[in-house]
Length: 315
Image (tube, rainbow, N blue to C red; front, side):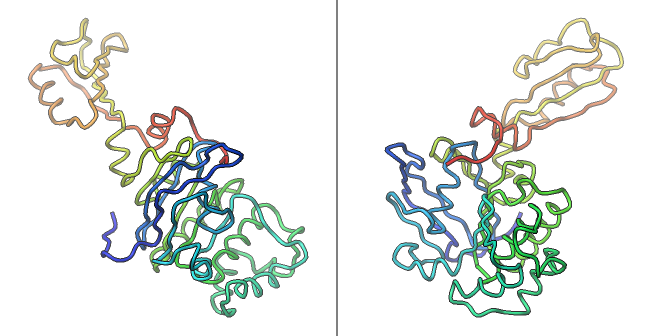
């Protein structure tokens, strides 16, 4: 768990709304992202994640509400906010008329930032683009196009990097390399906003997580706390000798006997302590051979909150 020094938030969203043809896509959400953290914005299809990201990036107009980046309003001070934000969009957006080298040399200028050859070469090296610099975009594979988009989003050294499904459709090697690079630039001070449907990635990478559903923000918490608070924990007790009946006093844990009475399954209440249950088992003097515990992960919590599993992002 990282320690944070109190300072201006990297991103603040207040009462944000957006509708398309009268259908609400984002319904008055509020959240903030602290400088230096990796923040996950999750949700099923149609949750409103991409619409929210596009409003932050200035690609979609706000319906109502306010967005500020490092203290700058993204409507009134849009030049400042565009310069401080880099976005890797879910859709692959490229210009087929430029080579990789030409596009990277030009792109920083779109933000009013001078080209930095040293930084550009670092991105090229870390993202494995060197052998492909003189290829036009049409000659790149899907994975290489994704690497180029990440380099393009970082070329002007943004203070906030938004990654919208950055590993969708890429190979395992690139995924691992990308997350290693993201951690590195985060340690150097870049704040990260991540959306992904690989929930194991979000659980491993993110300090905090917000979950959207039907345009509403339905949860926002430290990742560990969210999983712990909402997860179901199961205790498996393997017995030396089989039991014919479940011992009295364990009803709160919804006990179940399996494997011809040699396996006792207990479901721990949310927030319940394992030690209390173990004390009960000791008092019952059960012939215990082994004990195993199993706890839900972020995917289980996600399904519990939304009633859905992951998929590709909607509006």
